[in-house]
Length: 353
Image (cartoon, rainbow, N blue to C red):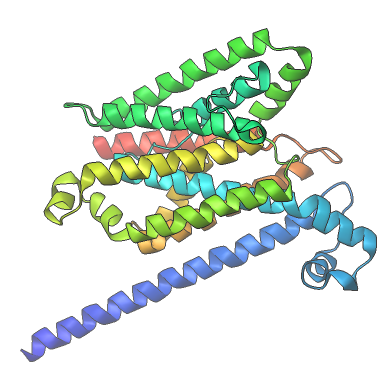
């Protein structure tokens, strides 16, 4: 009995130490994210010392008017848009990997981003509103509806007998090519002005960020995070397999459907505002998984922070590669994400062998 109590005490001690370690990692990611945002604010055609930027962030009246205007009215919406978009796409990718049990799943690789892009292009090029009566929000609504349709299609196929995770990835690739082909057709039919808007938008860019767009993407995160937090235990159990999750009382089918619908919202809103930004939903969750494991209580915030940090750092890089110019951020994420994606494919193949 004494030995059993000692073992239980040792196990509790190890669990407490592991929890503290994971909390420390989350704090570290948050600190790095804050530093990245500060560097993002300091970087641009006019560079400011980091100390002056920090002063402008916390004591705006203590700095020169010009500095305050540049930091708060021009650069701050872009920096915060990088944070909210990166967090949204990373959480979406994390939960897609969870419900599909596929490490290669993300809004980009499974076609949700391409579907959202096509829906938004319908509004930009043809002025078609899938949901009529919402003029100012036609583009994000179109993007959401198309992303949701693609998500439902993936969900239906995932429930068919004999469908494997590899089949789902192949379906996603087929959706990517299909929607990209439809998008190319719209570009061919577009006017010169609409074509320029669509091409610029498909490259992914944060330069048109506004406080209103930041507020909308942040509001979606605020609404979605409690929903995922409420299902944290069920989503963690789902990683053990459907049979195990069912034995624990998890309604697997309903959980998958609800999660896929919410994921489509998280993928559609950022795409409708900043264009196609790939691989954040793939890279962010895997960084989080390597740092804190699969427990959703830590994996969810770690994915959010990792995705936000990656896109914020990418925003800094996009302004420093070519002095005086801001490169499309979607191009930078693709250059970083493709090698990561290839290495992940080989890692999955090695585990399968």
